[in-house]
Length: 113
Length: 130
Image 1 (cartoon, rainbow over the protein chains, first blue to last red):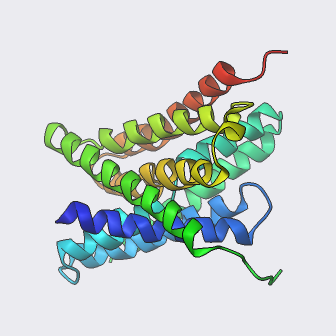
Image 2 (tube, rainbow over the protein chains, first blue to last red):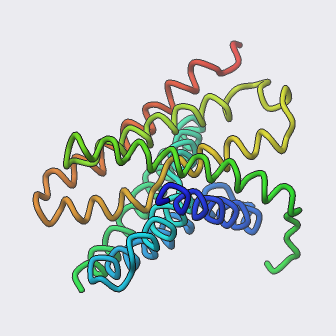
């Protein structure tokens, strides 16, 4: 049952991510935004789940399925590699560090409450 | 930059279906690993494997012309994109930090290093020989 809910969330999450990629043509920008927004969303959903405001079914659907599929690590790794191959080292470092630090800082605040 | 975005329904459904499979696989692998260890090795392995596969497909000089563009997008954006995840890494890192900050740092830096490393290996395996 949970795996079907996760799949349904993944269905919507991957379409939403693709839709966002069509909005921004600049390489890396949509992945950057999607990963930060998706992390914040998962932080909120996890917090609600921990406090008993969401059922485990909803968590599978929205958290594991939607947020998990909406955000992506493989494209992040690929784009970073692409910047490295093009010898744009500063851009690679800024891309990685701002994405990671921004999402970690915001999510750590969300999970405190 | 408001402009009309053209996403045909059949393309969306195909990407979504592959994305559903990717997400379900991820859930299965993560659950299996969670029975073995409290440390989130499942997500880490998934992200590294997915990054490697994606870079093989995207850096390959001819593969994209050998299959239908729709299937190509569904495989890369849909299946592999949904299989790997960033949001879970963020939440797991914050979670690890509360118990042991060193574990959190190892986890988040490890995810980045092995995934980018796997992409570089993929790139050198398939790039066009000059």
